[in-house]
Image (cartoon, rainbow over all chains, first blue to last red; front, side, top):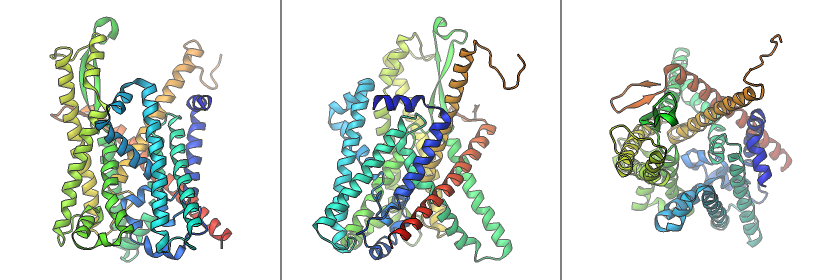
Length: 441
Length: 51
């Protein structure tokens, strides 16, 4: 296993990209592998509304087909949220995070094990709860056991694939699976937009609407790229010996400091009530029904239902909470300040040690809050456009667009870095002389 | 890199943003189409096999 991981890391870049591409195709095929005793008639009626939700987009529409990958990567996301929350109450987990590579490996194993456990529980609840309502045909103990086993194996396989993709060091494997699920639904979205805005209008409006749709898409991608690549540079003065010719270097703090995790977590938590309402129809009535409706982003920004907009306020609060939580979890200003002190480096105008740690903590939090405000504004603006125009949910609206763009950008920068490293290695092999193709000796 | 704001936030240069946007949009739409074709193709094969 260790050998395989090492081989994956040192593999040729082209081979890595090709393998990722074929794995994505395999994941999509797994999403449509049918299970014999799942009733197709039930699927068509029960999941009619669910297909357009954010959660369904994240799962790549697999829940609507109840295939091998019906649960997709959702148990792993839930496990990540739960385990990371547990670090607050279980100090041993927090210690594990700080214990270097060995500790972090153990921590990841705990998330994986919890993810598999959640897969089993979720698969069993689905087979037992929805099976009795007509999902399983025939509904008996054997079909419940078989469905639970198949869905647990499917979800565990995806978790394993996600972890294997991590070894290529071209980005997070789990994010790649989410990306694959999101983008595979784009042609369906294009067809939906065509049916709504282009097909029914005259030729002039056809062109105008097509241009407008393209413009909104491009502006959203540009805005996301701008946000994801922006950073605040903290000047660090190094001692002359270490820094060589340049005594001042920059420490970049990304504007979107916590990457996409707070938005995945917040959107996933918001989807849970709607999923529960599918199992317990009573939740769609009375006050519970109003709460469920206000937590679904497809119901926001309607003037006729102002109460449902409370969900927007809660969504903003939750992203702020997860951003602050994630900063505490992933940045340790005391450790950064200590490392700077050891290297003989300091922030100009700030004393080394505790004052530097305090300064870094303040700056990182402030930058993260600005970043969060920009990203949430973008997500809500896209949601508002989709809802007000009557489109509803699209695979590339709001959070899913941020996920897709972030995965591509991350992979692109890693590919660029690896290509540079390979060129440097080649240069050193040829004794500092790069040999161009066709060059005369 | 270009420093635009009073907050000290540094944004990428315009050329880099345009390049990244083009790559991102091409990847999203191109890969999306290929994966959708794999998806629907496999679904068609499975429905032929199991009906």
